[in-house]
Each structure stands twice: as structure tokens, then as C-alpha cells.
Image (cartoon, rainbow, N blue to C red; front, side, top):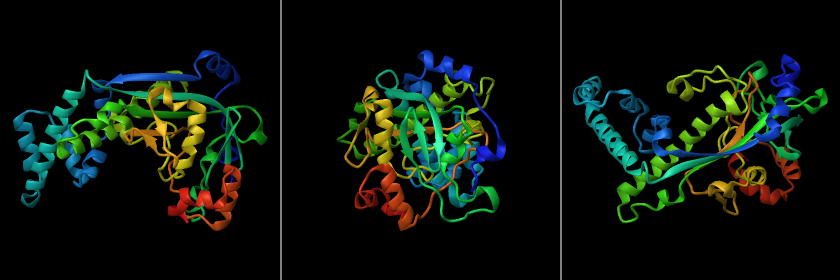
Amino acid sequence: MANVWSLTGKTLLSPLFFESVWDDMNKKLFTYSVHEVAEYINWSYFFHAWGFPLRFASIADVHGCDSCRALWLAAFPEGERAQASEAMQLYKEAGRMLAFLDGKYGTKAICRLCEAYAVEDDIYLDGVRFPLLRQQTSTAEGSDSYLCLSDFVRPHSLGGKDCVGVFAATVDTQMETLFSDDPYKRLLMQTLAERLAEATAEVMHQYVRRQMWGYAPTENLTIAQLHREEFQGIRPAVGYPSLPDLSVNFLIDELLQMTDIGITLTEHGAMQPHASVSGLMLAHPSARYFAVGKISDEQLTDYARRRGFPVAEMEKFLCHLL
């Protein structure tokens, strides 16, 4: 696939903007209370984690009075009402848990805007090489096939500068140790903590687009629109289909120093607290999510070379793609 920059010729940022960013705003830490991010929770993923059909997540959009909830319940076929009632009860208990957490614990995020350019399947972020993987199985006709995230970053061969954001978000470490003697509350706490970390990334990214990076200063989206990702650009997270290699967390840590917000990495690149998320922020108007999917031994060998790892070591991180 030709890099989208060569197809569109679009330049997102001017050199003057970069000068203003690099003066004092290229890295920022954020702290939030629970109530500041709770309204950004995507309840679909919460209910999915509990094994409920996603349609039950609509309870989050219903007014909390008994009559509104009764109308919501009655809208389901009779055979589904028992399970819908369980989902409604779970949502009530999640709300009580969030109220308990608010004022006692919070969430944190950190991001950095990096001068960036692309060289084939690598991007360079403030001079740090960040290798990426490319699709090898066509999933669509035309330009949507064989994607790599580097396709959405200005190629070095075109000259000029681009920008890529790097981020991480997490919850207060103590939240994951609560209710150790109550398995149900502990699981409820863990699933809510994961949603709070993701919601924190959502709030942070909104601020970055509007103000810190400022490429969408007039953006005014509802939370539902944010969940549908109607904003310009994408926020691919480490471990997700577009960025499936957990080992790149070591590169993100090199750029961010994630310990500043309490995140540490295991030898396999997993984050602690578990309720954490990290990744990239890309602003190109054509940027979209995709799944890398299966890769060949040839790409594995090339990627290991670019990452600076032995092939056998790289296989451990990418075994699910081989």
C-alpha cells in the first residue's frame, strides 16, 4: 500500500505550531478524581467483561428513577428480562462502588507529543525508533488493505515534521487491592478499574486534541460520539489489534517514564497496575483502526531485527500472530 501521505498530500501541522508545542507543552501529567472520568466509561465493555449481551449496556443511558428503569426492563422480550434485571442490578452496584471510590482514589495519565516521521514500517519519535507491524492478509479492496500505523505518519522522504502522541493512563494502585476478602466486590472493583483507566485515556485524549496538540480546537462531541470514535485521528493501544506487541511498552516507557504515574512493567511488558492502558495518538484524517492479523516468518525476522531482539525472544511476544 502507498503511504497515505503520498496519496493525500495533507500536512496537519505547521512549523510554527511545533515551535509553540516544543517550548513547554510536549509532556504533561494529568490527575483526575473518579467522578471526573466516570461519565466517560464505556459500559458496553464493562458488561462484556461480565458476560452480558452488549444491548444491556443501554441501562447506563436510562434515568435512574424506578419508573424509567421499569420501562427499560419491560422493553425486553419476556425471556430476556431475568438477565436484564441482573444487568440492571450490576449497574446499580457499580454506581455504588464508584460513589465509594470517589474522593478516596483517583486516576492518572501522562502523554508526550513527539516530533515524528515514518521510514517504511518504522516511526521515529523524538529520535527513538518505534518499529511497527504491517497487515499481510487483505481484508478489503483498495487502499484499506495491508495497513501499518506508519502509513498515517508523514514520511521522512517528504521532509518537514509530523507529530505523534504517546500516552499511558492508570488508576491509583491501591484500588486493585481493595476487597481482598470479598471475591464479588473484588471482581467488580477490578472491572471498574479497567474501565476507569480507559475512560481516563478518553478524557486525556479529548484535552490533547482540543488544547495541548490543538488540531481539533472546535471539537464538540457527546460522550456517545466519543465512544463511537467520531473524532479526528485514532488512539491505538498496546496489545490491541493495530499495535499487538506488548514489548513496545518498553519504548513507550523510554519516552514517558511511566513510573511518574505509578506504572511499572513486568519482564514481558505487561503494566502494573493491571488497570492501565498505553499507546499512540495519531491525527491524520485518514487514520483508522485495523487488525494486523497473522504475520509471516519473514516479517517476524525483519521485525525482530528492527526491535533489536533475537527472533526467538520476539516469538514470545508475537506467538499469537504466527
